[in-house]
Each structure stands twice: as structure tokens, then as C-alpha cells.
Image 1: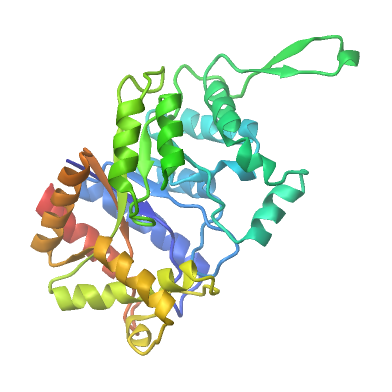
Image 2: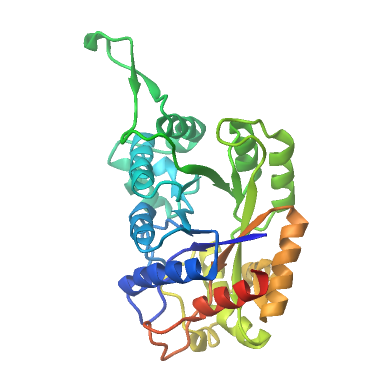
Length: 349
């Protein structure tokens, strides 16, 4: 079984966003040494909780400081951007680091409604871009390949159609994955013949149904001849289960606030999270998130990962290391996130 990592570049309380981004680079290098398959960087906007709104920039930095681990986006939220810009950005990355770049694409906003409007509004975009997601996805696929996209032009340009091609030209292209957490994404990935990633760490609802629908409806394409799946999961591993649970608590509370519409700031320190009180609604979110997380000692966590892979029939699991920090932690030293990934790798590799 393959293990990979998705990094949300969390900002711990008491640290800066710059610290969080540098931690992402350091953690990626550490994961490569440990033997992880790929390292993806998430996209979040206008929040003090996460530091990376532009995964393509972080992909370039991470790829430059590593040697063979695959690096990608988990993911680019396509309704915010033009397919041409996405295709060209990732073709540049692929030209610089051939055979190592993954383009994970999602439909979710990755932000609040006001920020989503700001991201799309300057170019006259609106919620119709979400409805047009399947067409945008087709356009990215075509632009990433050599065939390009046929673009209708005004009559005064004296051409009925124009074939738009992304640059730089390349013999091969990045690996494209569709991300999702619903039946919509499962049906779409199957219809388009795309590899599929289910965000089990975020939703956990309907995982089995979505993966089964994807596999049963899959239509082979140039991008995948057979169904390809993996799923994401939050994880905290420590020498004792009690310590792992303590390190997980701040992330659980942040998920509770996020899913009940409360503002997000930096990730609480463990000692501060232990003093927090949440609403009953947020506590229900916390309980659900805890049930689907990988948490415990190295042996317990490895058994949970194997069981998860067996239950859902995936060959790869992507771990989101969500351990928080204790008060007094030095950002220059190894973190609990490093420890999670190291202990898990020792058990599973």
C-alpha cells in the first residue's frame, strides 16, 4: 500500500504564516526521506488558520527542494480560475519537474462566500462558473494535452474557430486527479475517465457509495484506462494514545467551528484547546471527525490505515497530519506533525 501526504499549511497559535509555509517545505523534504509517494498542498483563502492560498507557488518551491517525491495540488479550486491559466501554470511546473507533478482539481470554494466572489468577481465570474465546472474540467484536460481547445471568435476576426493551445509545449503532461466529497464528483470522475480522490478527512459521509459509483460507472480514457482511487484521512500518531488524542483536539475543535460557520484563527495550542468549550452543534462535528481520524500509537494507527484501505478498496491513503503544538514549541525543531508521519512510516514501509 502506498502512503502520501496532503498539507494544509496550518498556522499554529504564536507562529506566523511564514513559519507555516517554511514548515510545509521542511515537512515535504522529511516525507521524501521517509519514502512517501506524493506530497500535495491544499488551497484555502482568507483564513488565519491556513497559510497557502496559492498551491502552485508552494509546489514550485517544494519540488525545487526535493528530488523524486511527486508534488501536487490538493487541490486547485477550478471555478475560481480560467482553465487556460491553470493549464499553463501546471505545464510550466511539469516542464521544470517532469514526471513529478500532480494536478488535483476540486469544485469546492475553499473559502467563505464573500472571498469566493472576490476571487471570481474581478473577471466578471459568478456562480455560473460552478455550474460550468464539467466544461472547465474538459478544457483543462484538452489544454494540458497537445490538442488544445476550439474557441469561437467574433466574426470580425475572420475566423470561425481558433484552436487555443497552452504553453510551454511538452511531450507529456502532469497527472490529473479529480477531488471530491460527494456523489457528484464520483459520477463526474467516472464519466470523464479521471483518477479520483475522495476527501474522507473532510466529509466521511458516503465514502463507500461514492467509490463504488465511480468504479462501476468508470469509462476508460486517455488519462486512465481503469479506475484509480485513493482517499484522504486526518492523522495523529504518538507514543501513547492519550498524547495522540491531546494533539488531535485542536484540529477537532477547529473543524467544529468551521462546520458551524464560526470564524477561524490560528490552530490552538494543545494546552489552550483543553480549556475550550464548544456549542452542542460543534461538538457533534467533533465527534464525527474523531471517529474517522487515524489516531493512536504507531501500531494502532498502522492497523487503522490498513483497515481503512481494505474497507474502501484503495491502493493508496493520503494522510493529513493535523497534530497541534504544545506551548513553548520551537518552530525550528521537529514537530508533532513530523512525529506522526515518521511513526506511521516506520510501521507501514
